[in-house]
Image (cartoon, rainbow, N blue to C red; front, top):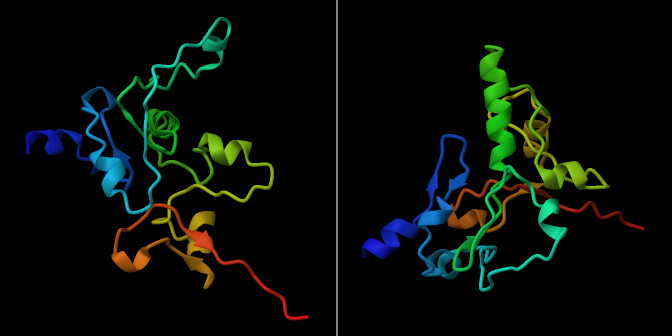
Length: 154
């Protein structure tokens, strides 16, 4: 079983799944056993004609063929926020770290933050009675929490 151990994901202190991409051995174990079915196997070795490689983010590793794709909540942005706060000898402020999906969402429907901070915007949304987690009854402890749609009686 050493192959499965190498491909296993481990959570960090913030609850994010960590994966060292150059160690992914392509067993697709993660995708098969992901309860949410959000992991995708990268079947292709993408060729990008010039000038398309210039659009890639230099802070993010380009994943090669045979690697599982998953959202990392822009770990590079989280690390930048940690480093800035550490250099200034303070904690990360609410709203200081913004993943790409939150930044580009035109409706501002996505919120990212520290739900352990009782004063954060994300914590107030989690405490809303409409908040729920997908497959929460399986005790998978997902990092994404949704709000139920409000229906009006006419």
